[in-house]
Image (tube, rainbow, N blue to C red; front, side, top):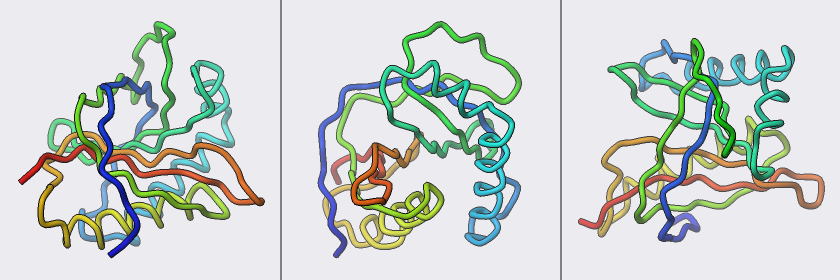
Length: 161
């Protein structure tokens, strides 16, 4: 089984800029392309830099959440700033509780996010005997760099079975 830990986390808030994912939830290639295109757009048009300027730390979140029966994906940061919500933006509440944490590294944020999600949802959760993901927001978090690679974690709220 993949390397992971269960970790207690205090609830936290992420402010995110989002996009609705239109691909079927089983179309991983389509979903990954939509996410990649979204990240390229927010990086190129300055929205990601503006978001980072609001951040209380260096973490950049890629958040997945079902909202009003839509699959949403957000670029986000932890912030204490009072940010007015606009079209496509959202304040995302992560609950107090236990989280599945999968650690990894990648050459790009895309590679890191895809690798972490693949391990978490493709290996750890299907094989888990004593805990389960029951919904709510989940995120991959780029936390820094080491040896020329991006380092990060996937955080998924779980409950004990």
